[in-house]
Length: 200
Length: 321
Image (cartoon, rainbow over the protein chains, first blue to last red):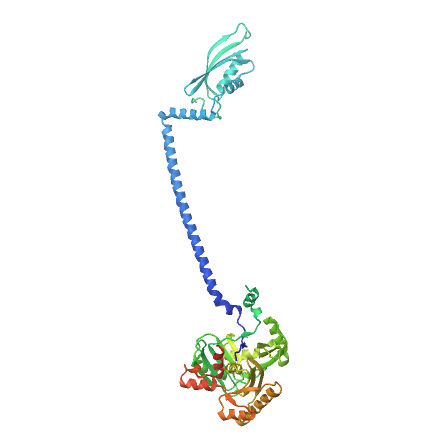
């Protein structure tokens, strides 16, 4: 006859399954550790790669900065100043993209006092420069002087010169004083972008 | 997937609080007059070592409700000496006790609940009438079997916690590390051959006699009596009388025809004593002994000790099949 009874305390859950569960738990633990190790190793490799790439970029940037500094030093040499100016002007023209006679007239008209009028205008393109020749007529000498001062102060125009002066005695402009002005047109530019006294 | 069964397996409460049989690798038997220790090899079904020591008379007085250990020091010395012979190699430990410390009952049921927890609560409640103390104070173990006439019978054993603690301390397992606790006669049951009819087992040990009637794989009757008398002759007379009463009870009340009667006395009695019992109960009585092949690993002295006292140990090995 087979007996099944036993008056001992039944084994607890831990007694019964501790060993059985320990093996899979250990395996799972080892697997998790291996996965974490692999993940950490991968992260470390990526970090090292990124560090190297960053270092390469920084050295490249330093190299480019050195080259830029060398180029700037070269440009500061007297023989390169002309080239620099031309490059800046070309850059300015590129910025402006177009020379508008209407804009030019408006800019010039903005400098005219009420008693002064623009009677003719001529634009001469010489190489990279735009020379402007125009005639104004004013009813009083003070008005013309005010215009001349405005022209000299304007950032759009440089090197103004007044080459002739006349007095109309007949016609619609009788009594007006005429002067012929010649200046270089610098075009629309941001304030302080080019030193007017330095040329372009 | 059977989630209910899986949940029951992994939930301790789902299995009830009764333990099931577990084969120990070291077993200790404490009787009023001797302590026996044995090292077992369950997989090979061999007794590897066995040792026994006498216990000073009166040191242990089996009782299901009162304190059992009178001379703890003497008992502890005997346990240590017996364990020294077999060595403590770890593994599961078993404890066999005198039949006098347990209460047993056969409980009839028309139906039994499927839930082990509910069944245990029911058995505990029905055991109350068989216990002189609160059922909450006992450890319970039971075995159910269907009855041919319908319904079920539950053979239940109850052992008071405080009594277990005493023996546990004597066995120096105060941490509660015992994996198997049984009355010695329960460990003899696996030695009975599988037969269709009823079998009678008369077990006498340490001044206590237990009579068991087994019908197939069902325990139909269990009765334990103290038979210790002033003289051996009076004890023998009491054993014979008790055997005759049990036989009559089986025949008249339970209407069972016993086909085989077995007698196990430890320390062993004479062959004539078994024959004398047979003459009184009008049935041939065979001496119940463990199979000899269980002791092939033992030396001659240990083998004779096994033959004299080791029948319950042999029963444990036979139950592991």
